[in-house]
Length: 236
Ligand code: 5RP
Image (tube, rainbow, N blue to C red; front, side, top):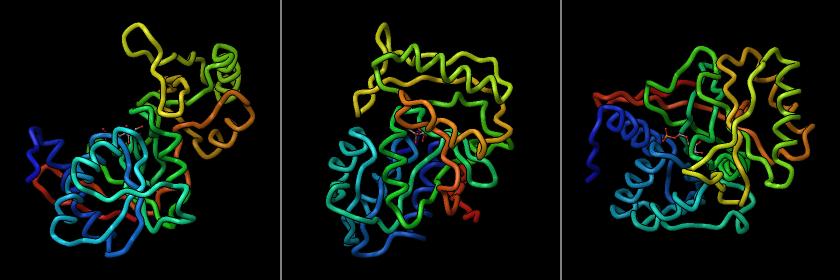
């Protein structure tokens, strides 16, 4: 039995349970997101597996892999599948068009690869994650370690074209830079309000040191929003 401590956790669990009931069926291969919302969902999925649901999941981080193993959810390697039926994953922010900022947990690269390998991607979120405009949450960008200061400078120039003056900040855990599951750094970009996420997203490909960015546009097919009273709504 899941033991939520806060109302936000109750809402996250409601979103995860609703999404499992709506989208997961026997013999599916699914993507398992990262972050606390996804980890509640994976624990809830473990309960369904114990009741007999046959399913296997690709985890989007080493942390999610550990939670899935503990919950008893069978796992798959992304190398062993060409396509997943559906991925459930949580956002740092989501707007009403389903555009998201992700990467608050530094897992955005695997999350985007797994989402793109899926026929359907469903965003699961508590109701505090909905925003009118993306950008209050700092946009995470995964960059290779080599020349990262130069990459940050090139990002700053790109942001200038979009009217932002902010400087990307390397994410630290204590004294050292955070290292992602793929061995890269994260630059957090405090853009405050991203008026044109669809225009900005493809431009990151112009900067060679950028491995992947946390703007998920054109990826989510549906959004499941959970509330603290245990209910959840599917928004399309
Ligand atoms: C990790 C992520 C997470 O999915 C995102 O940070 C949401 O986390 P939470 O569910 O804990 O709010 O993108 O890189």
